[in-house]
Length: 353
Image (cartoon, rainbow, N blue to C red; front, top):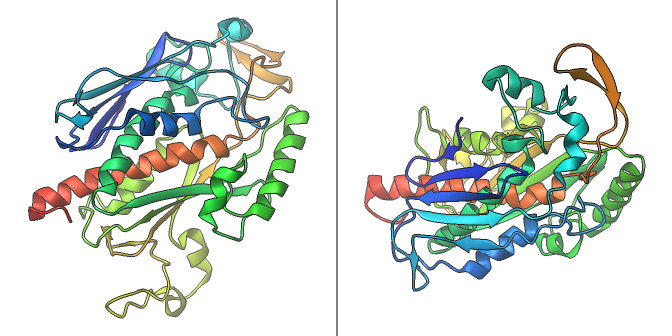
């Protein structure tokens, strides 16, 4: 089973949703960089369940334990292991699902591939796996900060409600993590209605990297935008990725979408900060389509493992919209992918940028 992302900056997650713990092993972080457990914890707190009435009410402290690779607040250059123990699993909520394949989930595909599966919360397919990504992303964000790169993210669409403003200071001021205060209220109302209907709703998150210098990325097969797309599509429940102008560019002409550069600044950013698979110095902009959460309270027809079907209502605590909690995961994966690209460029050119 593939659990590692990256080439020079390698991130390997481990653990299952209802196992004793989840975590991550990070290898390749340069020595001598500051490692702040409080900054790691802050990112995990943004991802953890039970943050508001519009997220799952599973209660997990998500307290990180840094087990190796750090001494006196600095990275040693050796692998950094981080562990987060599970405590509020309620595995009995999944007893009725042991012999059925839930619609929309990876139950059947996992069983078909491995011949065995952990039915409790989806095992490795659960969003709980992303704890390790976020912990690793905190290290990556700090590393990128040393070369002036900043990562931002927010929910820009829920259902048919779309954000039109990009006031990133608003993101942590509303439970939807939307950069548009007016749209956030409409999004929250839609999520609450959907929750009361025992259903779920999808949306789109947007991620921005500021300060990325030109030159990161490795054409032809490891283009930066290809790496970013792979990073985002590896996140559970993601079903599409746009870079810059994305699919909207298909309705326009080249004269409208070619980004004019005067040697200092760009007039537009349809390329999303990546040209020919290489960062071009503009902001990197990535949007990710997040499907509606697959676990819903409505009774659904499910295939039985031994044949036939039955109608089952999924018990347990689930997110009516997972976009707010995917935002810190998307930020983490953007930071991880960019850190790997930075280290490759540093090795190629012999300097930080």
